Image 1: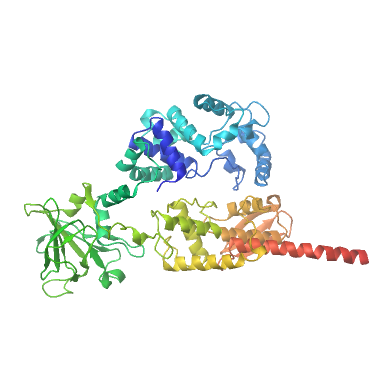
Image 2: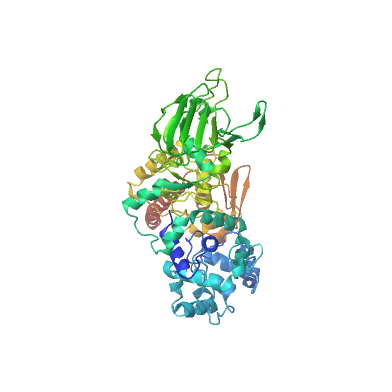
Length: 582
């Protein structure tokens, strides 16, 4: 499901003439990369890895030397980015007056930068962006600006290619973040289905779909062979079916007449539990039985879909079934009994003349299938609520709830950013899940199964209980409003990526207690043998945190700091009274 911002951007692009499915997918991918998934509408100047991080992107930032740039960077981390913006952008791109560097900083999905670009875009779109540059950060304007920028800066020959379009936008070939641009391109090419493109062309994107239309759309879907396998043998606990025997491969008794598949991992675990097998297609059962445990289904075109080696069968001859309906359980049945073969699904397909054909080839031609009630939720195993398995690539309210839960617990992605609560289990969400699993001693697989769900629920319940007291609701260290956020950002930037935001918060809290309470007092952070050492500029000012042990959550570290601050405030009046008494 697209977000409101994605819908707005799609509508703006389509209305401007970007109507090719491939170009539209590339456009959405490039803009998504540049804006962090349409979440970054204004440049932050939050450079935590040193002055070289800035100069590698903007050479002119070194105009006054590396020391001046470093001083400006630290000022920006303390919430005063004007000087840094002036070093980066002042005196160029039309910024000819003092303060223009910050006034015309990067805004919008495509990060419009410099007075010249603001003027040019404003004239084209009838927006007074020179007098009111803040208008560029409004989502509705950001969408129009991104479309204008694409059509004026990306050559037509590059608009269907992720690398070439990225190079035109980024100014480098290959562009930075090429892998992410290509991944987003592939995803949008899958998401922009013919149905969605038709909805766009009819101006109905984002409008409520009548119940009858919803039922009709849900009833007919395109299916390739992988999707067909997953419909027949739905994934369990993050494990999908995969092919173990190809159609036509040579065997001792001749060419293999079908395609074999079972769950990944061979015969361990799920394969020994006789999981339910579902119909690949709607039709009529023409046979159910035999020494091979066979069910045959004839579809509307007269093709015979034959599933063999079932341990048990739940359909009878003459019965009308729909795709996704249960037909039996997986087994290894043969002439010598139910355990003659290792358990698997053998799926063979005959055309109306009775000739064997490849099921994989037949389905990969993009067959339409009407799915029954049992298969409408073929992805249900991937989780649409608490307690069900969630993993990379999933979408829905279950993923959105997970993202909200992780954000509330202070868990961030590998770059220390909050997750977009968009219901899409992408790379950033997986990074946050891995960080949470590492911090809480769970299996680090990026999959949210029973153990991870249970741990998240427990942490959320503890947080809810703690929030009933006034002191349990501090601003978290990774929130820009927190007075120690600049120090947190500097420490987070020097901690290796695998360590969680909880670890960064714990290290920050210890640094503050040791007297290192601002970025300019921080000399550096070193991790050795799973222990983080914080070194201050003042001799003797240092702190350490054992990261091999479970660290407190970011929330708990923030609470601890607030508690210590209140204790100090209560102690000060007593000390003052003692001084007066003396």
